[in-house]
Image (tube, rainbow, N blue to C red; front, top):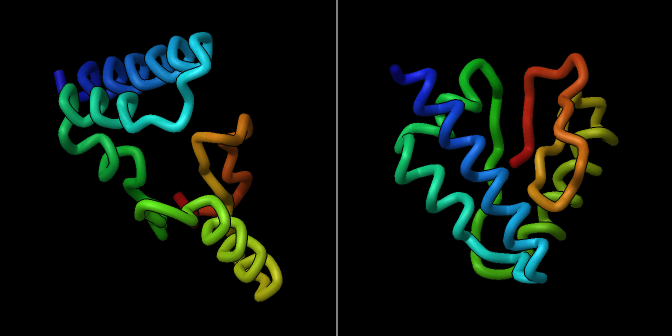
Length: 99
């Protein structure tokens, strides 16, 4: 049952993001809020088994995430970057993620 809730939460999140983009209403927290209502532990379950750095706040999240990603790659760290604004969600062979 928990796996079904997780799958449904991710599907609702992606669908709501698509609908918001169709109406030029990007930059909203609605997809995440909906996913958390359906499956309150969605973040911990999706990041299970990963070393994770999450960036949150009111302003500057994209800039800070890009800086952290660049610093990790420069230092030789195998980090992937997961951002809602990017199309690619692959971590490659890495088990580390910047969210």
